[in-house]
Image (cartoon, rainbow, N blue to C red; front, top):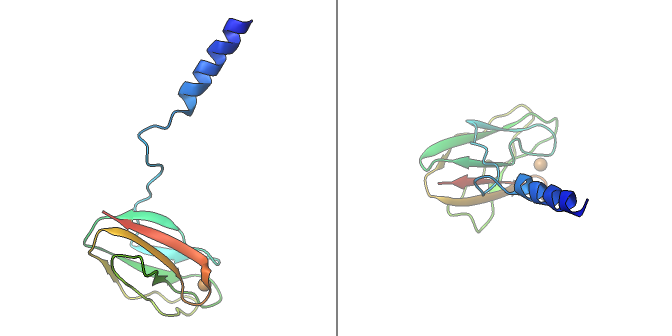
Length: 114
Ligand SMILES: [Cu+2]
């Protein structure tokens, strides 16, 4: 009985071991969508030199502006419902944390540029 319990715990331990580490890394799409007071995807990875746009699919204005910690700055300004931003060049590697131009840090996301 006790041996089975130990075996079970050992198997559970193997099953819970992270594979590869670092967690899920979603590649950034060409357009990051803003469907409803959130970014989709809100956390993605891009290659240095690539470009991204933001599209507001919500029915109120949203946008995206980098925090001061970002290695490069961007600011889409407020995007009206249905509007898509200009292309944003992601040239400098690092973590670009951003928040909403209209709603501040209550909406946020990040792009990791490698
Ligand atoms: Cu917003």
